[in-house]
Image 1 (spheres, rainbow, N blue to C red):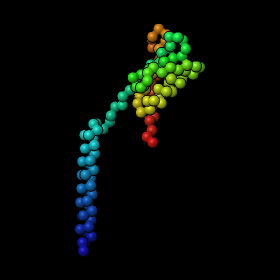
Image 2: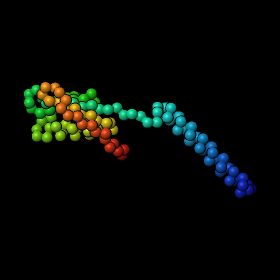
Image 3: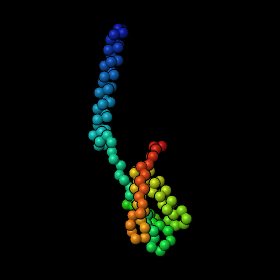
Length: 116
């Protein structure tokens, strides 16, 4: 039978070995996936009034079908909500343009993305 001192030494050896394996695993993952902190891309959206004066267009490179047409009394609010919800895991910058094509307002949203 092993003495109590020998069992304690075995436990300490196992803990040291497990610590080395864990450090090596973390290092491997960091090398594989890049740096510890990745910078997410920023989604930039533009809201332009339509030339026919019937609503607004939401356009962005982040959208698969762009521009999107919004009309009605809540057109701008709906466009902003769509931009924020579509880009949950990315920071969002929304530029509002007037009829002349000048930026009249800019909003930034750094979302609260939650993992499920």
